[in-house]
Length: 236
Ligand SMILES: *Cc1c(COP(=O)(O)O)cnc(C)c1O
Image (cartoon, rainbow, N blue to C red; front, side, top):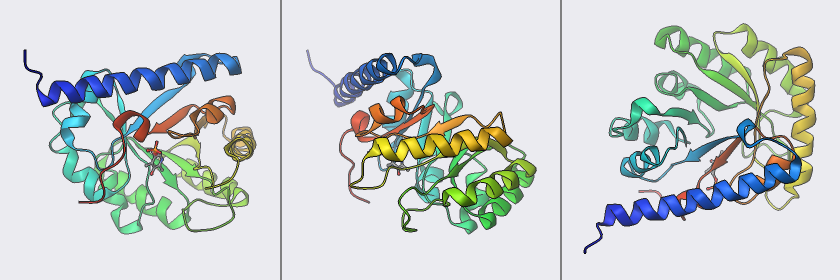
């Protein structure tokens, strides 16, 4: 019996999806949370459309991409496109915002007023419902994007008054720091946000290496790439 390369990849993805699922279940149990409060966004950046189709076949319903160029080109080739919610998780240039609103259901990286205005104009044209998360910078340096915690309330108000749907907050744990401390801070920012916007309850936090800490600190959305897809091919 010969095993097709596709079959091999499918088995590999299934095994890793199961392993991630087990990690989430045990982290949720440890935190006294229900597994059903947590959504996994599988970050497929730099992996081909064929992997996205295999993931959809295995039951994945939310994927994440981090550049407009790659996402727009790839999604055309995804046969299971209609089954999938698309999350944009990367830093977003204002001039790419309108393009992203043509395919993304959620933008996790809203971190400045100019970007809110550009996304709002995009939604006006695309006529699609797009949920926006305010990305919070938790390490005090500007490099990886995100608004400072102090800037979040004003930005959130702006999103809430736009055509975007305010979903909540997102963060990437600072490199080399304790993710638990970072996610504790994010949870505080979320609590303040919900005082003004009770519906904006999403907390997007946690990646392959720190998803347990994110679940422990209230994450509702995990963005998991390598733990499911394997190590990423370098840019083509
Ligand atoms: C790539 C990426 C992820 C996934 O990271 P892994 O370490 O592969 O799980 C999550 N969030 C953002 C913003 C990313 O760019």
